[in-house]
Amino acid sequence: MTAQVGTRLRSDARDNRERILAVARLAFATEGLDVPIREIARRAEVGAATLYRHFATKDALLSEAFAEQMETCSAIVAEGLAAPDPWQGFRLVVERLMELHALDRGFARVFTSRLPEAVFAADRDRTLRMLLDLVGRAKKAGPLRRDFVIEDLSLALMANEGIRAESPETRVAASRRFAALMLQSFMADPVAAPLPPPVRLPLSRA
Image 1 (spheres, rainbow, N blue to C red):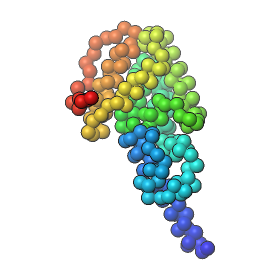
Image 2 (cartoon, one colour):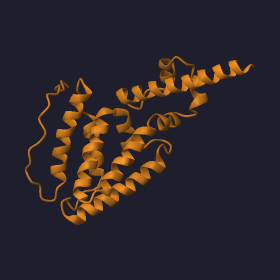
Image 3 (spheres, one colour):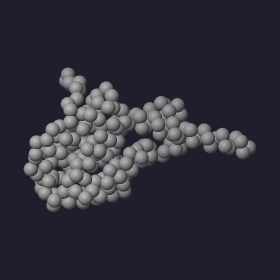
Image 4 (cartoon, rainbow, N blue to C red):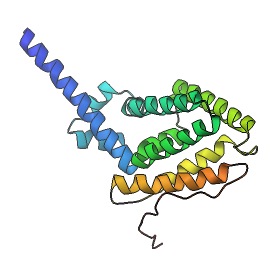
Protein backbone atom coordinates (compact mmCIF):
# COMPACT_ATOMS: atom_id res chain seq x y z
CA MET A 1 0.00 0.00 0.00
CA THR A 2 1.46 3.36 -0.99
CA ALA A 3 1.64 6.28 1.42
CA GLN A 4 -0.91 8.14 -0.71
CA VAL A 5 -3.42 5.28 -0.56
CA GLY A 6 -2.88 4.89 3.20
CA THR A 7 -3.47 8.59 3.75
CA ARG A 8 -6.67 8.46 1.69
CA LEU A 9 -7.97 5.47 3.66
CA ARG A 10 -7.28 7.21 6.96
CA SER A 11 -9.01 10.31 5.63
CA ASP A 12 -12.02 8.23 4.53
CA ALA A 13 -12.22 6.58 7.95
CA ARG A 14 -12.07 9.98 9.67
CA ASP A 15 -14.80 11.33 7.38
CA ASN A 16 -16.98 8.30 8.11
CA ARG A 17 -16.55 8.77 11.86
CA GLU A 18 -17.42 12.46 11.72
CA ARG A 19 -20.46 11.77 9.51
CA ILE A 20 -21.70 9.05 11.87
CA LEU A 21 -21.36 11.40 14.85
CA ALA A 22 -23.14 14.25 13.04
CA VAL A 23 -26.04 11.98 12.05
CA ALA A 24 -26.25 10.47 15.55
CA ARG A 25 -26.33 13.87 17.26
CA LEU A 26 -29.13 15.07 15.00
CA ALA A 27 -31.15 11.85 15.31
CA PHE A 28 -30.84 11.61 19.10
CA ALA A 29 -31.57 15.32 19.55
CA THR A 30 -34.70 15.35 17.39
CA GLU A 31 -36.06 11.82 17.92
CA GLY A 32 -34.69 10.70 21.27
CA LEU A 33 -32.38 7.83 22.14
CA ASP A 34 -34.40 4.96 20.67
CA VAL A 35 -33.20 5.47 17.08
CA PRO A 36 -31.69 2.06 16.10
CA ILE A 37 -27.97 2.01 15.49
CA ARG A 38 -28.52 0.45 12.04
CA GLU A 39 -30.73 3.42 11.17
CA ILE A 40 -27.90 5.73 12.18
CA ALA A 41 -25.60 3.79 9.85
CA ARG A 42 -28.12 4.01 6.98
CA ARG A 43 -28.51 7.76 7.34
CA ALA A 44 -24.74 8.20 7.55
CA GLU A 45 -24.46 6.14 4.34
CA VAL A 46 -22.12 3.57 5.86
CA GLY A 47 -22.54 -0.11 6.60
CA ALA A 48 -23.35 -1.31 10.11
CA ALA A 49 -19.95 -3.01 10.22
CA THR A 50 -18.25 0.33 9.53
CA LEU A 51 -20.19 2.00 12.32
CA TYR A 52 -19.32 -0.78 14.77
CA ARG A 53 -15.63 -0.48 13.88
CA HIS A 54 -15.75 3.09 15.18
CA PHE A 55 -18.23 2.54 18.02
CA ALA A 56 -18.43 -0.96 19.48
CA THR A 57 -21.72 -0.30 21.30
CA LYS A 58 -24.58 2.18 21.18
CA ASP A 59 -23.47 3.51 24.56
CA ALA A 60 -20.03 4.24 23.10
CA LEU A 61 -21.72 6.20 20.30
CA LEU A 62 -23.88 8.10 22.79
CA SER A 63 -20.87 8.95 24.93
CA GLU A 64 -18.90 10.34 21.99
CA ALA A 65 -21.88 12.11 20.42
CA PHE A 66 -22.70 14.04 23.59
CA ALA A 67 -19.23 14.48 25.09
CA GLU A 68 -19.22 18.22 24.35
CA GLN A 69 -22.67 18.74 25.86
CA MET A 70 -21.68 16.80 28.98
CA GLU A 71 -18.61 18.98 29.35
CA THR A 72 -20.79 22.08 28.96
CA CYS A 73 -23.20 20.80 31.60
CA SER A 74 -20.36 20.20 34.07
CA ALA A 75 -19.00 23.69 33.36
CA ILE A 76 -22.43 25.24 34.06
CA VAL A 77 -22.69 23.52 37.45
CA ALA A 78 -19.09 24.46 38.30
CA GLU A 79 -19.86 28.11 37.45
CA GLY A 80 -22.93 28.03 39.67
CA LEU A 81 -20.96 26.51 42.53
CA ALA A 82 -18.33 29.24 42.20
CA ALA A 83 -20.89 32.06 42.48
CA PRO A 84 -20.57 34.12 45.69
CA ASP A 85 -24.35 33.93 46.27
CA PRO A 86 -25.51 30.27 46.42
CA TRP A 87 -29.07 31.12 45.33
CA GLN A 88 -27.86 33.08 42.31
CA GLY A 89 -25.54 30.17 41.48
CA PHE A 90 -28.44 27.72 41.76
CA ARG A 91 -30.61 30.02 39.64
CA LEU A 92 -27.92 30.19 36.94
CA VAL A 93 -27.67 26.38 36.84
CA VAL A 94 -31.43 25.86 36.50
CA GLU A 95 -31.82 28.50 33.79
CA ARG A 96 -28.86 27.41 31.70
CA LEU A 97 -29.50 23.66 32.02
CA MET A 98 -33.10 24.14 30.93
CA GLU A 99 -31.98 26.22 27.97
CA LEU A 100 -29.43 23.56 26.96
CA HIS A 101 -32.00 20.79 27.30
CA ALA A 102 -34.67 22.72 25.38
CA LEU A 103 -32.32 22.82 22.41
CA ASP A 104 -31.25 19.18 22.56
CA ARG A 105 -33.82 16.47 23.37
CA GLY A 106 -31.30 13.69 22.97
CA PHE A 107 -28.94 15.14 25.55
CA ALA A 108 -31.84 15.82 27.89
CA ARG A 109 -32.65 12.12 27.84
CA VAL A 110 -29.02 11.11 28.33
CA PHE A 111 -28.81 13.40 31.35
CA THR A 112 -32.05 12.30 33.01
CA SER A 113 -32.16 8.59 32.05
CA ARG A 114 -30.58 5.50 33.48
CA LEU A 115 -28.78 3.83 30.59
CA PRO A 116 -27.88 0.10 30.45
CA GLU A 117 -24.17 0.80 30.79
CA ALA A 118 -22.11 3.53 32.44
CA VAL A 119 -22.38 6.27 29.81
CA PHE A 120 -20.94 9.47 31.30
CA ALA A 121 -20.81 7.75 34.72
CA ALA A 122 -17.70 9.56 35.96
CA ASP A 123 -18.74 12.94 34.51
CA ARG A 124 -22.29 12.65 35.81
CA ASP A 125 -21.12 11.61 39.28
CA ARG A 126 -18.71 14.55 39.49
CA THR A 127 -21.37 16.97 38.25
CA LEU A 128 -23.94 15.56 40.67
CA ARG A 129 -21.55 15.99 43.61
CA MET A 130 -21.04 19.65 42.66
CA LEU A 131 -24.79 20.13 42.27
CA LEU A 132 -25.50 18.58 45.68
CA ASP A 133 -22.92 20.89 47.22
CA LEU A 134 -24.59 23.90 45.59
CA VAL A 135 -28.05 22.78 46.76
CA GLY A 136 -26.75 22.39 50.32
CA ARG A 137 -25.29 25.89 50.26
CA ALA A 138 -28.48 27.42 48.85
CA LYS A 139 -30.55 25.73 51.57
CA LYS A 140 -28.16 26.88 54.29
CA ALA A 141 -28.27 30.45 52.95
CA GLY A 142 -32.06 30.37 53.20
CA PRO A 143 -33.60 31.04 49.75
CA LEU A 144 -33.93 27.38 48.66
CA ARG A 145 -36.73 25.47 50.34
CA ARG A 146 -35.54 22.86 52.82
CA ASP A 147 -37.53 20.00 51.28
CA PHE A 148 -36.04 20.48 47.79
CA VAL A 149 -34.40 17.31 46.42
CA ILE A 150 -32.38 16.72 43.24
CA GLU A 151 -35.26 14.68 41.83
CA ASP A 152 -37.28 17.91 41.75
CA LEU A 153 -34.77 19.34 39.29
CA SER A 154 -34.93 16.11 37.26
CA LEU A 155 -38.72 16.45 37.07
CA ALA A 156 -38.36 20.04 35.90
CA LEU A 157 -35.86 19.02 33.23
CA MET A 158 -38.12 16.20 32.03
CA ALA A 159 -41.04 18.62 31.77
CA ASN A 160 -38.80 21.14 30.02
CA GLU A 161 -37.90 18.45 27.48
CA GLY A 162 -41.56 18.32 26.48
CA ILE A 163 -41.56 21.86 25.06
CA ARG A 164 -42.57 21.68 21.41
CA ALA A 165 -42.07 24.69 19.15
CA GLU A 166 -41.26 25.34 15.52
CA SER A 167 -37.95 27.09 16.11
CA PRO A 168 -35.04 26.82 18.56
CA GLU A 169 -35.57 30.48 19.50
CA THR A 170 -39.16 29.80 20.53
CA ARG A 171 -38.15 26.72 22.53
CA VAL A 172 -35.53 28.74 24.40
CA ALA A 173 -38.01 31.56 25.11
CA ALA A 174 -40.56 29.08 26.45
CA SER A 175 -37.87 27.36 28.50
CA ARG A 176 -36.86 30.66 30.12
CA ARG A 177 -40.43 31.33 31.24
CA PHE A 178 -40.79 27.78 32.56
CA ALA A 179 -37.47 28.09 34.42
CA ALA A 180 -38.70 31.27 36.10
CA LEU A 181 -41.87 29.49 37.23
CA MET A 182 -39.87 26.55 38.58
CA LEU A 183 -37.42 28.79 40.42
CA GLN A 184 -40.30 30.54 42.18
CA SER A 185 -41.65 27.16 43.25
CA PHE A 186 -38.22 26.15 44.59
CA MET A 187 -37.96 29.22 46.85
CA ALA A 188 -38.48 28.88 50.59
CA ASP A 189 -40.39 32.18 50.61
CA PRO A 190 -41.58 32.80 47.04
CA VAL A 191 -41.60 36.42 45.98
CA ALA A 192 -43.80 37.39 43.05
CA ALA A 193 -41.59 38.71 40.26
CA PRO A 194 -42.25 39.50 36.59
CA LEU A 195 -41.94 36.45 34.36
CA PRO A 196 -40.27 36.40 30.95
CA PRO A 197 -42.77 37.09 28.14
CA PRO A 198 -45.25 34.27 27.35
CA VAL A 199 -44.68 32.20 24.23
CA ARG A 200 -47.37 30.93 21.88
CA LEU A 201 -47.08 27.14 21.68
CA PRO A 202 -49.21 24.56 19.86
CA LEU A 203 -51.88 22.95 22.03
CA SER A 204 -52.06 19.16 22.19
CA ARG A 205 -55.09 17.58 20.49
CA ALA A 206 -54.88 14.28 22.34
